Length: 210
Image (cartoon, rainbow, N blue to C red; front, side):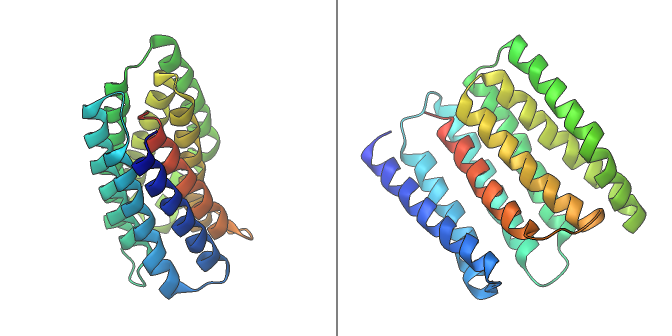
């Protein structure tokens, strides 16, 4: 990693920590500033590091920007869950293509399918059922999203890159907790768990470019 990318990564980590603090103390104004700024810093990390695939870099940057849009939709007081879900679904599509551009192996893909399948059976099924019970119109969008993030996890395993695998799994944990607390059951400190695993997951995906 070159000096510029390392600097932007340090900035991203620092802003993310402030965002985690904002979530912990329920300081929404600080959260509104730090959450999108963390993604902006990660975009600069992706743009300045020396990637193994230039195509993967730009696909990932688009995914990061779509993720930032999803962040904004989901953190605003208005109920913008569906636009937020759509933004992240598109982000995962770009992440999948970016991971494919890094190169994938059959063994890794098979492992990813197994891991994603088990997670979908144990967790995703309950979230989909809860979403459908809350609003029948949410069943298809939530299934589509679960399919997209499962594909992202599968392709991350396919790359065999530890940063990609770790980032994808952390991202999945973040979304699983978010979906679980929204549609199944709340539990203490869930918002902190969501934001920490989310940021670490995005960082892992960016560092997979190296």
